[in-house]
Image 1: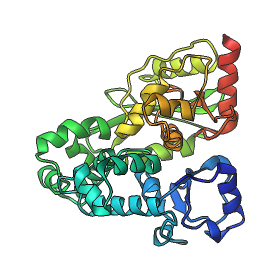
Image 2: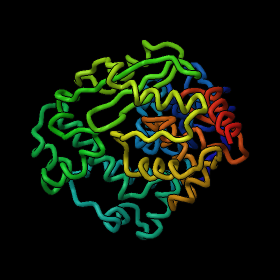
Image 3: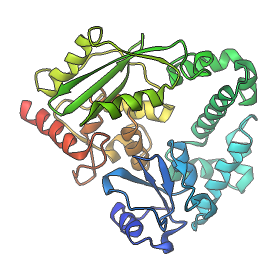
Image 4: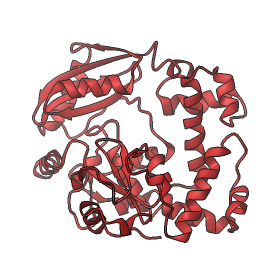
Length: 351
């Protein structure tokens, strides 16, 4: 199934056209909620939305279903999209089992090859990667309700707690036992300063930069950091982070083309592949979402690439602003399109 163009999708949600219900869902980046096209909620700005073929794809990228329009209650109208949605629901309820491609293909009477190709086309990730995402989510949810690391690991389908430690430390940014307490025992230092593009917040753990935020006022930036790490010890330390912050500010002033700082970020395997590719874009150049998708071996995952860019926890340091639409149009940037344009102009003029 191919999504309508972004302009057609956006026109459908502006007019609340119920004829498009089941053809796609719209996800709002500012609220992290996804809806059906006919949702009566206020129409979001076009730069704040992204579109997915099925609800499971939106959820795999961190969005939750709207409680007003209940988008999960509308089945996809496309037969292949419906089967993929069924596979996703099956994985969610059998995540504790050993799920092979052959096991999944029997659920929809497809060949493993057809399932792999169709699933990637609709979801932007492979069935195996989706299983990993759901397994990790289940593991984290069990930790939050008080399960031990061992019990949570086994309940989520990991063969042992040692295996889950090997996989989760990089994805969580902290050991599972610490994540269980919402970041307790983790100290995050942050600093906020003026920059050419507004208020800049940079936060670091002992391992590296874990967050970069930018806006007009510092209060929302600090609130977002606390929301991400609700139980961590978060302290302001302008002196300790002075050099790291200055490195980012120097870049924003056009004095420094590269930012070389250690990172400590929590992302999925798919996001990591996208972010790694972003690092390869030379200063002063751009790539399209489609070009990034091809570079990571998933040429039909341009929309998923766009969402991974929007969820980049360390914008500017990892230059997601260098990715543009297929026609060169500026689309989707966490700090706003005006800042994206300014960054690209800065790099272009510095050549």
